[in-house]
Image (cartoon, rainbow, N blue to C red; front, side, top):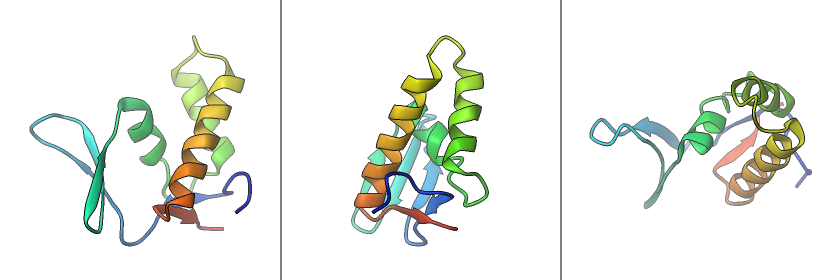
Length: 93
């Protein structure tokens, strides 16, 4: 797998849903799910196939101005890579 997906998007079998009771996002996939924190849901809400990984990093860096861009880039790439390795996101490019 490449170090970073160009245009990440959710696998068609995966759904990102907002839990009305908790207000948190859930990543749902066959037979399992993940309860996402704000950072994870912020990344995945942008994994539509329209944004590049660099676009996602730039947007999050603008929102989290107190965190270095290099730290955000490292974390976004690691998160995307982990989910891609699990087959939950894929490259739309």
